[in-house]
Length: 293
Image 1 (cartoon, rainbow, N blue to C red):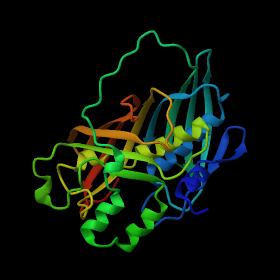
Image 2 (image 1 turned 90 degrees about the horizontal axis):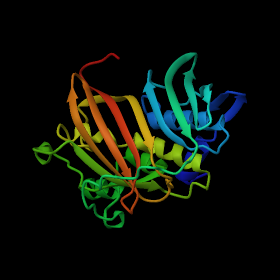
Image 3 (image 1 turned 90 degrees about the vertical axis):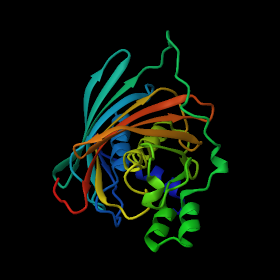
């Protein structure tokens, strides 16, 4: 299986080992910790597998409690909190080697006609994704060639990511930069037709670039990193149906960063400018000279 999109679908295909217990793979990576979007996506799959499949998820709220270890399976335990006439609620606990590393609460809503319909317009008239270089192309243009580690990551990357603003490489380039970032994204290949897979794939992607908005005023995104950073929590609200293998715009901003924590908000739009998903996340930022959790 060489297509990164196929590998993502496979990663989200959990093994059911009991009625409310699922096991997910955690690929062996050179990273210090399991990617948070993977854990969130797999947890949402586990929650969705215990519903009737007729109610799409409308919101999730999650906490990253401990770093997960790459290469070690993760067990997802689902609590069936509520099965109402219109809403279904599930609570998921992710356990690795006997320790809880993540928990998530997800709510599913039976589709119904809306009595109130409105939406604020997108922030800017963004360029089309086809007019922008990929991240890999920008790095190659700047460095001449990708470092071996980045080359391996690029081959495994399940999403095509294109920054609306060109990447900044030096401290001088970030002077006066607003804490904002925007990217076009889509899966690098087809993800099939299961709406739950697309929702969980986008959940995976939502953790990839959101904290960029916190870092932009402080350091170049692709230069040497001066901070250790980690996702602390994650919340999403799903407004409209979508496909994660079609282009979506992820508009991100950081309203505040203080006390070692930075808050980031994201809005995900389709090409027609319709708001699909709202995202909020807080991240921990510590100078690399410090340690602890």
